[in-house]
Length: 248
Image (spheres, one colour):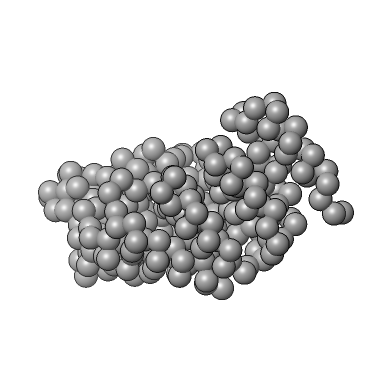
């Protein structure tokens, strides 16, 4: 009952925040490429609402912070056919004070309902303080999934948190295990490699040249590097040459 009341209260708040004319909802539904209903709530407003609920500052929550059990109940009771209700649960997971174990358990549940890149990318944020070994292991399990957006989540978690000097080699090693041909998985991989190349240029080019990486992902990674302003003209010349020499 408490979970359903919270869902109703959140839905009421989300509807208040939704764009009145519906144009943003239609636009966001196309961009997110989701089959869910989209109310049309902009992300800054979504984040403010989720933070206020997570920290007990929402006036209609009477100062009550949310814990892992409350979020799990909310997530299971939420309308999974409404994009903002699912995303709101993900934001609660990010903003609430939780242990790494609880956060991972909730993330596993959340990913069951993620049907678009947006529900993954807006959820897989850069973390400030976290158990690096625990989250690396979880990312690895996600990469082994057969669910397209669970694999994408694993890739984005590595990109957001493990491309530093200390962890980039381990991240690349985990990515070599990916065996998924879905579009949003390969786009995430290309995004990661293009991001990694900014600070690990030579290492990333060697990784892209490895046997076993599919040509589409390699070519898309090169393309993303060429579209970026973060590479020198000399580096872009090298990237163009590498792309030109790829088999057709």
